[in-house]
Image 1 (cartoon, rainbow, N blue to C red):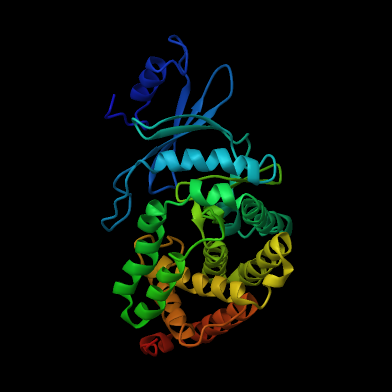
Image 2 (image 1 turned 120 degrees about the horizontal axis):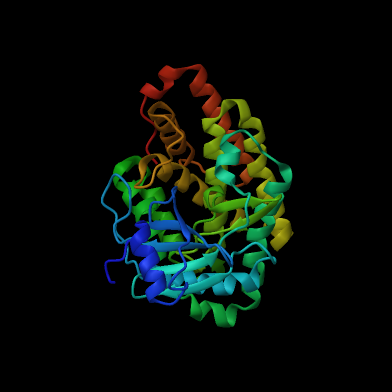
Length: 355
């Protein structure tokens, strides 16, 4: 069944039976899960036994512009899940149940109900310090523990082809073609992302990929995991928190504070000497690049309106002329610029200085 579409319940159930993953008279309840652009994702709720989430990697991603990636990345995600369960704190990575490379499908144990997507929680204005603490400590644990197994993991996860296609090209290279004044800065970030690595990098560490069950964070979606620069993960995560703060003036202080708290707990979970050093500066640069990519790249956030996207693009183009060196400076300068431009909307009519 090479043309399997797991979003078609009859097809999926027939395939699960044919491959003996469920009994011939078992009819699970199938529910299509939304939110992702690179995979078909469904919940398989079985009458007896554990429930599963199945993912099927797509070759053509569900975005407005042309964007393709080899669906064999499902195999990389399965590999990532196997290792992450040994690196991350217990009970934070769903267990891999099976994979089938022939149809680019993997299955994981479903996170117990009830749970909520942390992105949705944050966008509703529910910013809890303990969630932010876990967010920082979970990433810090993955980076720290992977360094201890560097001799093995550096070779196991050496390939970066999926990271290149799903992150470096769409976030940095493509955005450079859309925002010419930032092209030099973005291409320097692409070069940084391609340097020899120092730890396992998740590559998609954002609130969208966090589920909250009974106060505990679970991390999902690992298809671009690779051995690389851990500061990409930090910058990527910071960009998501800062962009949400930009989108939600009523919760801006809380979400801006969450970005600072995330960094604080991350660095304590890895090494306190990160503060104020080259690693922090690199994380800030990646955050700036991701903030620009999320309003001008291939994969743009849906919660900023066109005026806010333009404002964010102009602010980042301005900041990269003299990038802040610390997370605190990034948050302070970004929101000072937001406030200034919100109070004077006509400021957005003027082009930014060239980078």
